[in-house]
Length: 260
Length: 242
Image (cartoon, chains in turn yellow, cyan):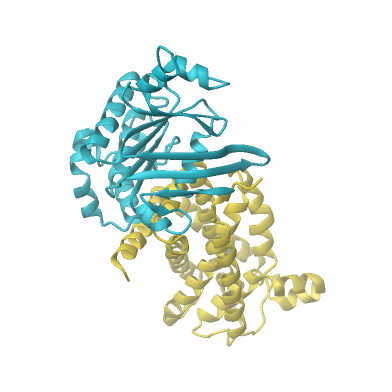
């Protein structure tokens, strides 16, 4: 890689990491949210929502074990949206201009932002998984390694989705709408909290909504990756979704055109 | 070192913010004077490639902005009207981040501007958080940052707005001297009449059009007025000045 690109990449990643660690409450809330689900919600519902044998698990599993990949994806989803919030903030504060005035290509700059955001997601997920061990969530050691590419790809997709949204959100205050119209529907209409066959028993149209939700593919991709397996369908879906989101994210960063 | 625009237009909805604007400026200190809403900031956004004109073209140092954006950005430094510093990072972190965006290493960046930092009395403040600096110091950091990649063209959009008298004086004198020391082209947008000297290149803009361009003192003589204030009043319909 040309040195100029390398310096630029390092600069963007370093800034994102510095900003992340300066906002300690961000790390705390990123971990507390899924841990609450894992410790409190899962404990309450484990009896009501027993999970039978299903892939990739070779035996009966606890509900905590089932929802762990979904909660990891929840962390990545929130981090992706948090990045988009920081883009909205940067735009309102003017620092977005500094980024866009770089002589390096804009696709490269946005790619650096996404990679930086993905690294932060990876860090948060690893910390979460270490805490998860304390409540008997059993993940093989190799699962940590095999899940890294999956986490990275999911983070890239959700980051690109966040970037795309950041350009649709005109004001910082409107970000609350993202919670209601993006984060919650994506999370609840997926296999993060319940297997989809359970959803199919309850409502067929909800089942199909969940099936077509790319977040379901993210959860399943990570679920298999944590056990050293690959879900080809989920991988393909996430790759396609990433390409589409990246394309639209990039398109939305064109200069404002002054046509009448 | 030059900035040339040809018949530029830019609309916000149906209103023309820039209306067939043609401009030709060279090395030295050039002042762009106009009331609020005259089109100064829009013009800056177009010169920096953040806005795309509806028609017309821009050439900076001979490079066409539509086709050679990267080359232009390598040779252009900008201080925007609104502060663009990251308040939670230190002065040094802000400077090195900007340098990185231009493909420059941290050590090279600090070497490039060590003298400028000293002239702007920022050397001792490098590790301070930007949030802890006053408005004048923040502006100095932005000027140092804009010079980090050794640009040939420096754009400053209302760089002294909101600053106290001493800070304004310090910054206007410093930027004025830069064009002589470094031989660069400085375009200084302002609506503050007292920032203009008789020998400055002056461009008066209003309603998105150039109303007059030339040496400030000569323009006053040509329009038969006593000073820039009267010149400005006679050429702008909705004069709003300080």
